Image (tube, rainbow, N blue to C red):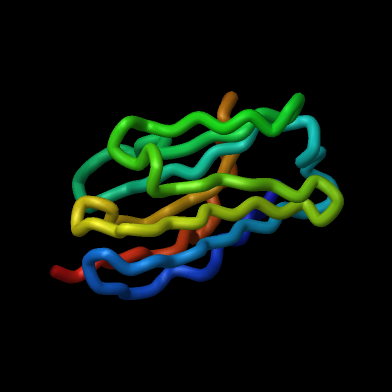
Length: 116
């Protein structure tokens, strides 16, 4: 079982910034996997917010976060990050990292709360 560990969440005001991080075990073949950040709000399914390629590090974002979120990865450290700026109340949720393809073995996630 691969355990991903997310961290860095918190409460910020509208317009604030936050950086969340994820670390994967050595056994997870992290560098071979396209990775993503997902967001979940109460009563709703997880939504893929941003992803990053394992081949060239190319990022993709959903429209609502383009220009505000930046995803990055460090394959030598098995880590991934999501820098978030100009945060909005609708960015609130629990953020999880996982593979783009066949995500499983979800971690605890990290709570991001944007207060207005």
